[in-house]
Structure formats: C-alpha cells, structure tokens
Image 1 (cartoon, one colour):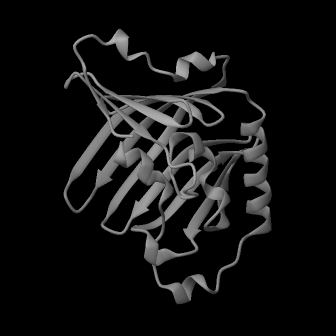
Image 2 (tube, rainbow, N blue to C red; image 1 turned 30 degrees about the vertical axis):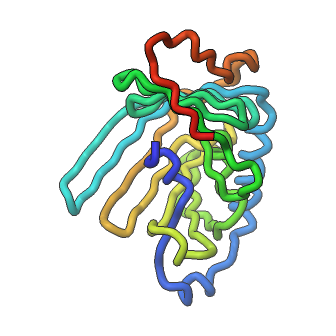
Length: 212
C-alpha cells in the first residue's frame, strides 16, 4: 500500500536547475482538461497494472489492481490488500492475517495522500513540461517545487489527448528504481454510497483493530 501512495512524491535534483524552469502553459491546459473530464463522472472504475524495476537490486515485480472512486470515497484491491474508505475512515482488510484495521483520514492535512486524490495529485506542488508526443499520446513531465522533500527524480504522465485521460504514470527514482502504473480500464460506473462502508460483522473471526 505504501508503494501505491508513493506515486504522489517526485523528482530530486539540484534546486538551482529547477529555478530556471517554469510551467508550460500548454501542459497546464491539458492537465486542466484531464481534471475536468475526471470530475464529470460521478464514479469511476479503474483496473491497472503495476510494474517495478529496480536496476541496482535486479528486482522486477508485476501485479494488477482495481480501484473504484466516487468523490472522496474509494475501494481498492492491490498487492493482496483490500481497502474501503467512506472519505473519513479507511478499513484495511488483510485476509491472510484475518485482521481488519480501521484508521482515520486526517482531513485537515492538505498533504494527506489517498487513492481518491491520486488522479489529481499534479494540481499542486509541481512544475510541469510538455515532452514527446506519439499520435494522441502526450507525455507531461512533472518536477516537484520542493525537491528536497521527496526521494524521486521525476514522473511522467502519459495522457490520451482524445479521451482526456491519464493512461500511464511512470515514476523515476533516484536509486535506479522505475515504477509505473498502466491504466488497463477506465470507465464511468454507478455505485451506491453504502459500498464504501464496511460491515465488520461480515467477517466473523477477524480481529478488528481500531486505530482511530
């Protein structure tokens, strides 16, 4: 789960180099269009593939995940863990351990990272530039405004300019680690709010750990 949330951190390099870079207006326009297209859907279902390549440690990992978003609510299945959130609380279901952890989202912390704000994480804190374009696919490079606060080199968003959707997010680490999230399916959906509240009585025998 940490890896999923690490998506939002970015590009360590020399501050003096960044000071010479400013936001590309064309990149901002495209990202604003992506944000508006995402907001137009009441709820979204996403299936994705996660790929990790650590060249220094010769590690390669591949796994699939599913995410359903409705405003600040979500359900997430990723790396053997299931999460459900109503926007205030998060239930983490660990089937193998027969344990459910309940935690609280800090709504007063603007830096709180959750899957519900993942698709729009680029809106604050980054410098963005247009890079190469291949047909309808446009690469936008993101650099952090405060590089000393993160442990990444950069991130690339691959945007479908026709659909106004992010189809790939690739993160470049400063330790020869590259990870990417490839969107396999992105579709509007209808889902009841009750889906985002877990009834722990449906998990008899599970230990309930309330961390709130």
